[in-house]
Image 1 (tube, rainbow, N blue to C red):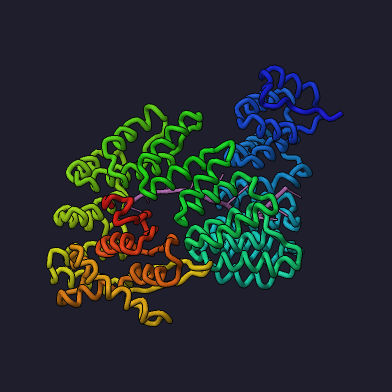
Image 2: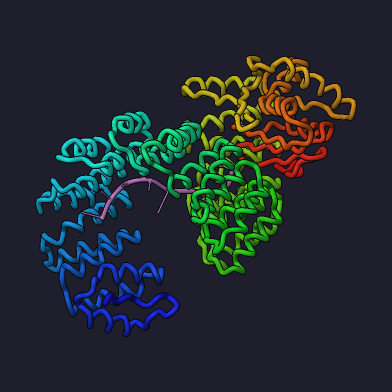
Length: 606
DNA sequence: CTCCGATGAT
C-alpha cells in the first residue's frame, strides 16, 4: 500500500517523520520528501531530517532523491550543495546519475551559474551521458539561459537526436538575450511546435518590448495553431496579458479574459493576478478591483499588484488602506510592496505618512530598505519641494545612490524650478547613465524655461556628439478594439482635417473661460504664436480629439502616451473634460490621470 | 528527468 506523508494541517513532529521514513527504507523517498516540502512550504524539517538520514543510511539514492526534490521546488543552491556534498563523501554511483544531471543543470540555469554549469557539463561527459536526450536538452537550456548562445548552439547541433524541448530551450534562451531574429528563425524552422514553443515566443516578445508581436502571435496560435491542436495553457495566458497591459489594449485583454474563462484557465491564481495588472494598466481600476476581489486566497503578488495599481492611479488613500488590509490578512509584505506603498504616498503628496512607513518598514515589517525605496522617499520629498531634505537623505544613504535616486531629484527640480540642484542631479546622471537621453532632454527643458538658450544649444551638441536620438512623443487610443496612434504634429491621419479643426477651436473657447496657454512647455526658441501652435499639435491632444470625434457622447476616452504628459496638455484636457462632458483617462510613462468635470485626479500634483 | 512563468520605482 502506498504510504503518504501527513498534510500540513497535521504536520508531524520531527521525530515521527524521522521514524516513519527510516522505518520504511524502501519508500519512494524522492516523492515523499518532495511532497513534504510542497505541503509544508518549508524545507526546514526536511533538511534536518535529511542530515540525520545521511549519517544513518548514507547512499547516493538518498542524495539523488533529495537533490531532485530540491530542484523541483526551486531551491537551487541546496541542489548544488548536496551534489558536491555527495561527491565529497565518495558517493558517485554513475547509474543513479541519469536522472540527476538534468536537475543539476536546471539549478545552474536557474541561478545563471555558467561556470558551475561547465563543471556539471564535464561530469556529464565523464560519466558518458553526452548522448542522452534529456542531458542534451538540459545543457542547451543551461548555456542558453546563461546567455552563452554560441555554446548552446554548438551543443544543439551536436545532439544526435533533438526533441522539441531542445528547440524550445534554445529559442527561449535567444529571447532572454534579446536575439529576437534568431528565435524567430528557429521557431519557423521547427517541424513540430508544442504549447511551450508558442509560449516562449509570446513571452519573449512581451518581455522584449514588442507587445504587438506578442499579441499577434497569440492570435496566430489560437486560430492558426488551433488546427495543429496547440491550445494556450495558463502560462500562455499569463504571458500574453502583460503585452495587453503594455500597449493598453483593453479590448484585447477582455477578449483574452473571456477566452480564459471559457476554458477554465481563469481559476489559476497567477492568471488572475495577471488580469488585475492588465486591467489596472489598461486604465480600468474598477475591473482590476473586481478581479482582485474574486481572487481567494490572495498571495503577496496579488496584493502588490493591487497596491501598485492604486499607487499609479494616484489613489493614495486606497493604496494605504489596501496595504493595511494586507497586513490584517497576515500576508507578509516584501520589497515590492513597499515600492508600491511609498510611490503611492509620493504620487498623492502624502509626505508624512510615507516617511512614517519608510521608518517602519524594517522595524515593524522586517523588510530591509533597498536603493529603490530610497529612490521613492527621495521622490516623495523632492516632489513636495523639500529638496534640501532629499539631498540630506541621499548623503545618509547606506548605499551608493542609483540613477533612479538622482532621476527623482532632477524631475522634481524641473517641477519646482530649481536650476541649481537640478544641474547637480543632471551631472550625477550623466556619469551614471550617459546613454539615457531623457536626462539631457529634462535639463535642456529646464534651461529653455529659464530662457538659457545657449545652454540648450550646448546640450543639444552633446547629445548629437554622443549619437543619441530623442524619442519621438506619441499617443494612442483604442476604438472598437483597434489602436490609433498619433505622433506630435501628425498631419497624415485620415481625419487630420477634422482633428485640427476641433483643436483649433479650443484655445478660443478656453481663453473665453480664462485659460492661458502655458508656452513654457513649448521648448523651442520661436515666437509666442508659434509656440502656441506647437502645443496644439502634441500627440495626446490629437488622440483625444480623435476620440471625441469617433465615440458616442459619454464614452470614457482612454489615451496612452509614451512620455510624460505635457503641462499645457494637462490643463487643456481638464478643460476638454468639462466642455465635452467626458471622462478621460490618460496613462503616461509614470502614472494615470483621470480627468473629469474640469479637474484631474492627480490634483495637479505630479 | 529537460523546454513556457505574474507584481516594482525613476
